[in-house]
Length: 223
Image (cartoon, rainbow, N blue to C red; front, side, top):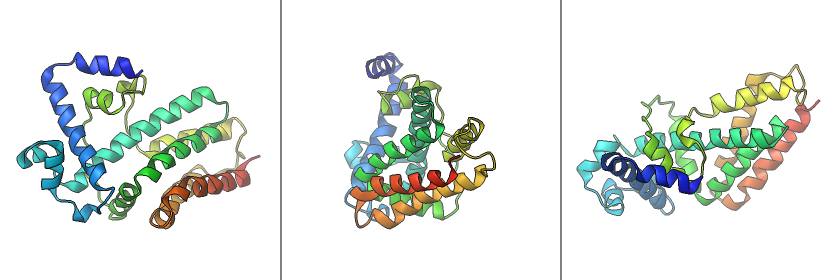
């Protein structure tokens, strides 16, 4: 719960709170700058100015602007994992759970299209960056509304979707001959590919295009 998370955050030692606040402030500064510039156009001096910290302080938290994308992806994965767990509890349909994850995620992307495009460009480079260790303080601060967020890890789509697809097969929602890896690749391709084609010209249309394609995909897989 929001109040509980903030209360727990406020009870932490000052050093832990300051670390989390500074790191989240820098990330929020990047997200704000990406509303009007590409990543290559953003200067670190602009980020530290908006976050009200020094440039040397920036490098205590991040190696580069690309490293900030890694951090965001990890936080994003935590939120998707939380969505998966919440939707799974509310619904008897694992296919519905998968669709709900992408529905809510696509709505966020609509508000931050350049951020998504930069993530796609980053992933296309095939780099294997070192992940961040995300503290409980950071989770409580960035996700004040997610209950038990301190127990949730950001493990990426590859750890969230295949188990849900597997359960959909086991419960008979999907045909037993369904290739789990192929479905995962198809869903991921729709998610990223549609963003690449739509976000530049019509970001507000992204959720509806993605929903229609996911519906079509799962219609063909349903028993």
